[in-house]
Image (tube, rainbow, N blue to C red; front, side, top):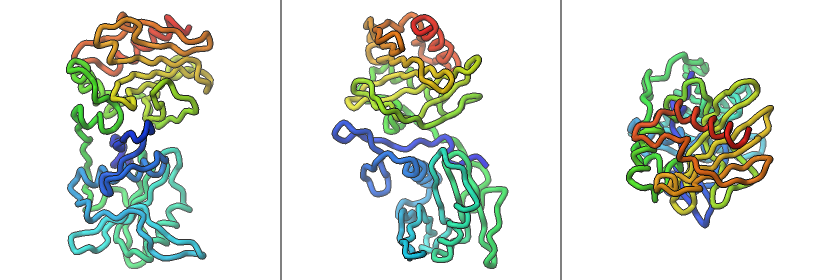
Length: 305
């Protein structure tokens, strides 16, 4: 079934110009690793449905197996501090396998939780432990409930998750607050992926979540908004053809909304070109994500055909 964390994104912080994950339970920055992102997304969900952070344990040592120390990803306890859910997290690109299910079942022999959850942040697999049997569930169990509401982020929530910069003007804040829910909570035919890159653009760390939208033929468009190390806001679009990145558009949203020319940069095989995106991008207070994707396609058609 779809993950409870499908549309939840981890918080990020900048430390010495490095973008890091933020653990809201231990209140400390962590390296941005795939499994850590999923773990934090699940934790964000648990906190959102009222599970106390004092009853959520992470990376708890539970013994040894074949001379290796066993550590759980997440254990959720009830008010009597009895284990209720044992959670095993895999990276977003890793499918849940039988081997992984057997691993969490072995771990639970030392934990004794009545419910098991395996998640990669995209799909969840729930199990109930009954009389030494482990049965797969078709619905989420009672501690969670059958339905899950999507999170509601205001501007500050989007900022904490790295989608909007703290220095955004009031007009830009309004624009981002209207755009981002449609982009990240209602992706439609688009796919949401965390993309990593070897090269960075100026003060911008491109490693982030992107909406990947199919275009004609073998072309795809990856789109995101990101914050810089110094509180700026950027829109980044990547044109991919035959699994090769052909061009990258970086829009300095702060300059765009301040009415400054040369507010954007196009990186392509032809080189680096400063451009003005004001004539292409709609800055109305309620932009639509589908319209934005069409507008970005037009920019690529003009400057990176």
